[in-house]
Length: 363
Ligand code: SAH
Image (cartoon, rainbow, N blue to C red; front, side):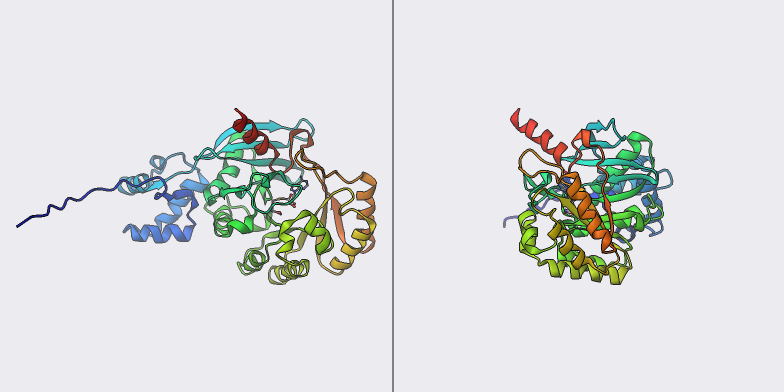
């Protein structure tokens, strides 16, 4: 008779299987702790070490038992970003950061200083698959989604490096937030938790190129976020020239999704309109836009397009922008021309990351 010898092989937990400690919401912490046979009130303590005091290692959590710390150390991981580059504008103090992730991918984030406080613009993905024609972030396509912890760390690192307090966050860097929906929501819940950074949800803006399902889903989350829509055109024909996503969703449906968002949240929508010479900056475009937005409680942000060298689009002339603004104002639409921040430091979406990766590939 043959005997089989069974031996128990203790499997090492790979990095991918580890629990990303900084990506867990308070609710998730509670259920993880219960699974581990721990008391759920520990969730608040651990969460505040991670997101309030922002410890570098589990060992600094002095009110947590040794055995629980050991469990977190062996089964979990703590995401860190490494600053790879920094550019500071001499014009307005805007600071652009290039961060390296643990898999050596790079992302960029921007700190902008305003009178009302500091605002950070974060990336939500490594690259982007939306293909907007004037955007540098999309040139290399989508590499991967960012984890909630990687979105949070952009803010935490900027605060740590500069000693500044961040009061506003805009998800307007590289990536389409609706394309990374679950992680976006976790990020917002963690960022606004009182045991963490405790940023008011009202001070967070999420910008989308108009992914209708995501916008409608967001309207149901009971989160008073500011939703910004990258409109860029008054009709589908012009919009398709700039945003491939316009082939998937009709402008009518995108605007209806904005109305639903407003009805559910009472939050005024921001419409972003990047002005491209000869494409979307005519008087006709302005009039058509005024018609489409008439009576809506909204705000239009006119942004002179920031030319990227891979494309031939040009910035609209100052008079065209001013004229466009006047037409909207005559129609009682709130409109501002966005101040160009950090124009001396490649501040357009994705340009710093692009120049870094192109340089690296060329080596
Ligand atoms: N994917 C999201 C968020 C990232 S882009 C979105 O589309 O809204 C943030 C904003 O910057 C968008 O309105 C986008 O259209 C705009 N943008 C990107 N590149 C630009 C450029 N070179 N000049 C002006 N605006 C640009």
